[in-house]
Length: 307
Image (cartoon, rainbow, N blue to C red; front, side):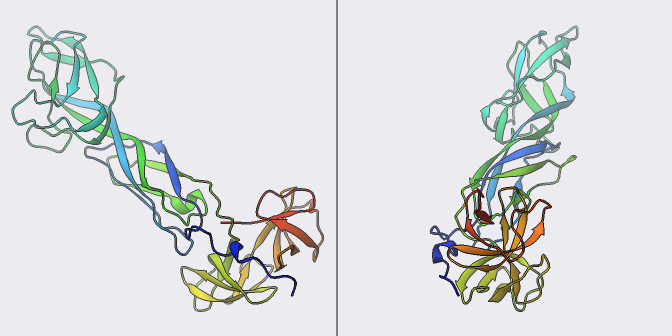
C-alpha cells in the first residue's frame, strides 16, 4: 500500500475524542413548581464523557394570591422570600432576586393585582414555602409598605450552566439535553465546543455488533483495512462504498470544494481514492485519487470527515 496514515489521525492527543457541550440554547422554557434538572445523552464516540449541567430558573408567573396582606401601596416593589413571614427561612440561591410590583390594592391596602413581570430573577435554588404545598406554593413577599402577602407562583428555565463539557459528541443531536418533567417540559439544543481533535471519523459495523456506529480508527492494517472501535466493540473493518456497511465493514466520507460527498475506498498518508456518494456536480470521477485534509476542501483537495 502507499505510505500509511500518521497515527495522530487515529487517537486525539488529549485522549478525549469529539466535541464537548459549551452551552444550551433553551427553545421552550417550560412551566415548573420546583427546581428543574437537566441531563445529556451519552456521547457516541468510545472514550467520550457525558456532559453535565445545572438549571438556572426564573419566575414565570404569579398563579394566584394566597394571602392579600394589608397596608400595601400601588407601585410597591416586593421580592420573593426573605423572612417576612414566620416559617419562611430562605429566599433561595440567586444572582438576581425576582421582583413583583403591586398594581392595585383594596381599601385596607390588600393586594388585588400585580403589574406585568419585568424582573424575573435568576435562581439555582428556589425560595422556600411558608407552609404546605409545593416548593413554589405559599411564598412570602418582602418589602413595600405592607405585610403578610403571600403568592403561589410558577417557574421556568432561564439557562443551563454547564458543569462538565464532556467529550465524544459528533453533532448536536448526539448531545440532546433532557429536562425534568413539569406542567410544561422545557426543551433545548446543545451548542458544541467546536474544537476538532483532528481525528478521522469512521462509521464501522464491528464484528459482533448490531449496526454501524461512529467509530475511532485504532490501527491501519492495509490501504482499505483498519482496526476500528466503537461502543459495540473493536474489530478489523474494510472500507466500502455504502451507507449501509455489513458486519466487518466501514465507510469514511470525503467532501470536495463544491460540497459533493464521496466514499473513501482507499486511504494513504497523502491520497484518498473516491467513489461518488451524494451531489450532482462532482469534481472527481469514480476511482480518482485526490489529496486530502481534515480542514476545509479547496481546489483539488478533499476534506475527510473528522471527529
